[in-house]
Image 1 (cartoon, rainbow, N blue to C red):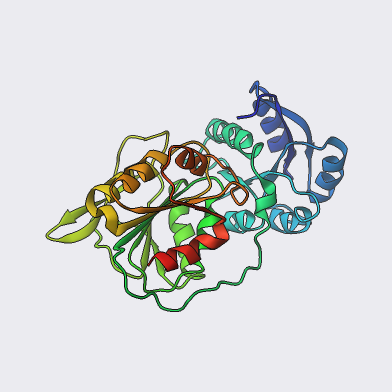
Image 2: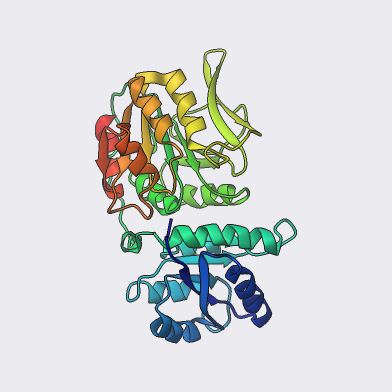
Amino acid sequence: MPKRKVRVLIVDDSMMFRETLKKMLNEDEGVEIVDTAVDPYDARDKLLKHEPDVMVLDVQMPRMDGIEFLKRLLPQYPIPVVVMSSLDNMVFDALRYGAVEFVNKPNSNVTMDDMVKELVIKIKIASIANVSSLKRINRKAQTNGRASGTNVKIIAIGASTGGTEALYEVLQRLPGDLPPIVVVQHMPAVFTKMYAQRLNGLCKPVIKEAENAEELKAGAVYIAPGGLQMSIQRQQNKSMLRVFNGDKRNGHCPSCDVLFDSVAALYGKSAVGIILTGMGQDGAYGLLNMKQRGAVTLGQDEKSSVVYGMPKVAFEIGAVDYQLPVQEIGQKLLQLI
């Protein structure tokens, strides 16, 4: 995490919200608000004036919304951005066009205090993000057609910060007839279902939010619901999802380690494990467990990671067989299968 104060520009059209947010964020010893802006035009000038470390950006604004601002700004002025949004799909557009993280604006379930606490954490994560890896837009998927003969019975993927785009980068390159794919992407409740629905319209496999006691099927991708743990269990010779209320592990619920450990125990060498961009170490030791039981393991490399945390720890402890740019992971997966 950063060793000095993170200098932040706030962009929001509400004066009351801007000033309240500025006051609350400045109470954290690791954050300094250098200025606020009323809209993207105002923000553009203040970015050049102050050169902040991170920009906090409202998605919904008059004159120019946050999505359009990201599309125009980041190719010329790469800066880590944390977006603030209501419960809608616009947040995924923001992530696609370069935002590093997002937080919910206050609503019936999220207080201003809750939002600020989460925002402080994500500002600090964003300040060390690799923004050069965010220019992955207008990609064309390349696949080898159908998957052929395999001993792989399951694929497990874990990701966090930057993972929404990294996961899309992998899945868009895959055909629709692979073994079941189970995924933990650190994300709040509600958003995981929206994210799964979004990916389902963009990729060949069937992609859905996981449900408890659901049987795993080939050609499907199951994303763990936000706020719940997910593992795999056997019932009457069938592989079933277990989605349950559980304690956080490595600070996360769902946790990549919880999923990876269950895959290691049930599938051994018949599995492939993949760890993508993210802060911290969640998934690293679970991936090592998979490797020690015979699974093949892949890790995202530093250059293509938004935050080279989880894959770095996994690589350093010897959990990764192949470390690759995210754009090559899908192809490598097909070669293994």
